[in-house]
Picture 1 (cartoon, each protein chain N blue to C red):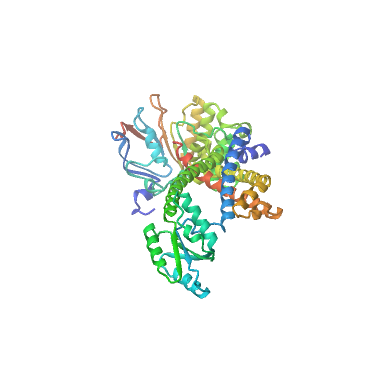
Picture 2 (cartoon, each protein chain N blue to C red; picture 1 turned 90 degrees about the vertical axis):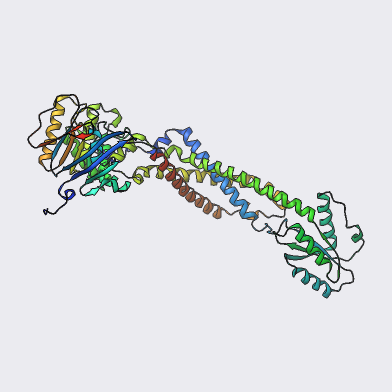
Length: 232
Length: 312
């Protein structure tokens, strides 16, 4: 990368002057300027209602800003048509606070569909799904055929995490990844995220509100939101 | 990997058609609605095809009956005919026997309650009469003026125009077209509703599935694809049902239809007695077309329903 490269070219995620409003009065985010480099591990902290989920949804190309720009891999999200935005989302590993699993599909089908959408043949999609489930500590042979609606919350969350990994994304966007998990499972998931970050995957994860947080690791960058603004 | 997981990854995505097959009453209603719409379309198409040669574009237009003088020779009669054809507004001239012309006029005048003005003509036994048909747009005054000009022609004994009957027919035609348009519009709405009902059971998306697919980057076409495929299959099944019902109906009603049609001078043999080969081709064509219609309606309906699913 040359020194003349723009922020969008040097960084994987760039937010410039981003504001997000819901309705005329409520500004969930205001004046957000942040650049996230490739391979960074970013933790977004803040009290409840600070705008963490809103920020993550913008980075995940699930929403567009009311004003300002969000660029992912150099592409401005707000200027993309719906099909292009969908293709972009397929390359991002997304885990929302709710698992958002297709209730009638089996676990394996729910995880493999992301790879199918990416163009993988059925066999390869299946193998990727099995590998992703194994990576998050689930047994595909046991859970593979179970409809997602029958999963307990903790396992549903891990299946959703496996789905986020199935396309080997360069960017992981995770809203409170430890939610619904017991402490050991949550800790192992956190360790997994550290491994991904160390391997060069950009990880942007929000921390839960109102609970003591694990100490930040040396390579972790903290973004603190307060009332929709980044604290300096 | 075991076959079980192969199946799980490939085959057990929610199938709209599978869900419909597990609900036989809903399946029957879907097929019934679709078959009804297709049978209605086949009936209209069949009627139009059968009547195509019997529709007279000038039917109901104003006409003038020109009675040639008894002293006119054949050449004079031809000259009268040519002069009538040259009149502005006249689009057709045909010969009728005098008696037939008198009968037509008597019916028309009776229909509007007018007295028979033709008594003085009935005593003349010579047969020549020409019926001049006017173009549709010519009003009653125009017809009257043309009749005045026709009376001035040499060798013309008399000219009668059915202006009152024409006015009545024109009014009835306008009312008929207006009411027909309203009925046609209502029928079209009902027809479309039947088509939508045919695919609703398979085109209604699972909201969880839609949200999950959107989250992983599926575009609208990918999300709709199962509904479109299932709608095509339901359409084809409804088409087959409709075609078989139409064939059975024609076979059952054929003789009665034939009698009714012949009373109006219409031959329906070509429709009611189709050979088995043609019928098989026709059924196949209906099934294929119905599958296409099902796919199209399913595409539109599922697109509308998917857009209504919020999130994620």
